[in-house]
Length: 316
Image 1 (tube, helix red, strand yellow):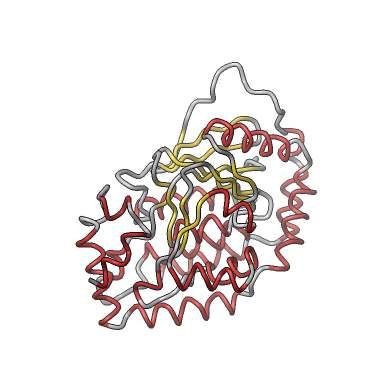
Image 2 (cartoon, rainbow, N blue to C red; image 1 turned 135 degrees about the vertical axis):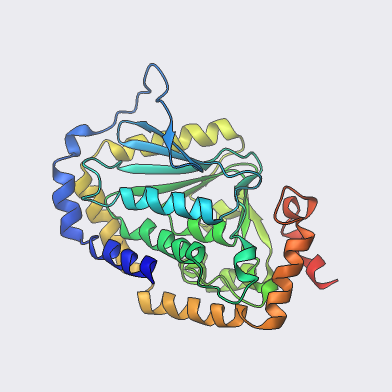
């Protein structure tokens, strides 16, 4: 498929030494810990609102009504991330913060409607997989999740594959795929295993239960928890600008080295293949269709706002 070939070329351009060579000329454009006198003018990619201050970019997810990871958000995030690849930009940000414009949703979940047909390997799903891989393959930029809302399934898989995670008082994240006869397969299984250990990953992925900010901090799902949104934003801004002060070559080498502990491409591909096969089973597709009905077609419904507690309604 055209997208697969294009993405293959993208990944081939992410060699470590290319990142280092590109970074050497951009260190002088570093950031400072002080804020500008006026807020930076926003730019963006449709569902992503971008504000750049020095070498830090804040990418605000805005895809009403629930920040669904649908074709629009998948396309915008993929285009934004590929723009950060060394060679595609003369001076990409050293740090990108992903936050949300919605007070209740970070990224709700992947668009369930893409699995209602006969072909799960849609462009939306392919771009979703590509986005997760770009988050850790782009070693010259650090990605931080600032989470103060719901993030299930794709929402959680994206944030656990970022480099750091910070939690606010409204954080509720988890994996609900078990209800559809599949699993947290786009990196979720493997990265959760490394973040919180095998037993805890089993507990949350098999039960479909969510977690709040204090508990996420306690077990390493989040770096830190803050009990109000202002403190959360200030803390994330501080660490982002602190990191961006330093030479990109060191940032790049640190992320590249830590990536040695990431799951292999073969393991990740195996997880996806198994889950896609399970998702194609008629009885599992039926649960996806019922989810669409109960959620009023993935809108700001009591069902969506009540996840994961409302998940059991699929079996009534």
